[in-house]
Length: 551
Image (tube, rainbow, N blue to C red; front, side, top):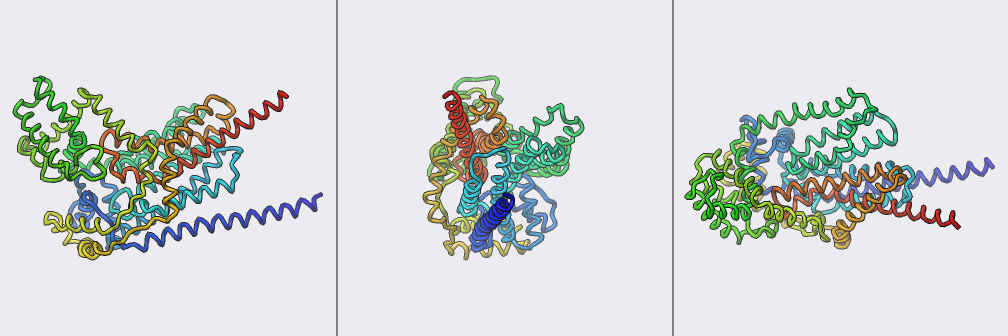
């Protein structure tokens, strides 16, 4: 008998080694091909009108001026640009490093997918099927043109997916260490790391502030576990919060205080995005005198006339991202339009900032139905049967290079650029790059695959929520799949937190706000489908056992 068992074990071991080799060979080939696609593009990064807020602090520091935030941007991404350009003397190095982070994001996605399986004590989905699906998710993320373009842009969206995957990975490992492996020390380290990453995310994109809270709830809940020592619980939350305060938020407050636009940029952005709703409130205040409004009738009339005129002027310039709004808030904000002309009514920067804040808050109080309608309309942009995360529109690089050249050669910016050789070389190369018509082509299969993911996102979300409700209603299912369901919920929370913040304060019509969520959305959709299959299979198996027992 033992003689028969040993050869069988050897055969199984040989099969396992072959399977393991094929799996690792597959993901390495995917990553290698994805790297070739990225590094075959021109090294010079893409840029847009927002680039100056990220680029000028880095260039100022390189030429010896104090590091100063610009245009209301946080210091973390400009600091990253400064470090890379200082080290490599090339702006092309920024896109190269971001592509490396992008490849790392894909690897983390696959690692998180593999690690999440351990949250199911006895998974019913075969390991081979699980690994194949993981490879598909990896390939979709790494080979999707949207990922490549995002990493090639001189924007924080090139780095943010890496840190979202890193933070989610730490949370998965926290749950494993606490509930599966019963290793409180490892749970402490992973929980602290999860909080640290969450505190970093809003400094890349402020819209991730709510996401940072929602996705670390399992870690915060640990603070109420009386079984753990209070010193350990305090340290797990206190250490990352203190570190983030000293290393991130304290410098942020110091740098932002020196930014002349920090006082007005966010209030002006909120005002212009909600210009039509605020215009309604301005009209009501103009028609009905209200002592709560600290502005004269003459001031309000001048503001309404200016706003009406500039909204109409902006309509022909509406881009795809603002189509749902019906006007171009960027025109009001950046061009020789409303925000610049308001200086004739309110000469001081503080006066304009106070006006923007006052009417944004007043419109929420007086016209909540209008503001909530705008929020729900924006959420519908994401939560529908064509999820914009998987938009297939592919652009060439030449248009972006051409606009960037015009923007950066403006005399108000070029005087600083000309003092930094790396920046001057970058700008000098832009006219040639604008004629190359380079584009990152989608694999042909993506014409079928991406629409499938886009159309299945909302049904998958609803089925996942139904599976979670089913699971919560039964103790056995809760015990078997509870940890796994928590990860699915956290994945959807990454989307929800970011989307809610953008819906409240901006517009989800801007494609990069959705595309930046590609990695976490792919992972969540896969995990959600898996949860539905596991819960349904267990319910079916239990029902069949009950029928057999009763017969």
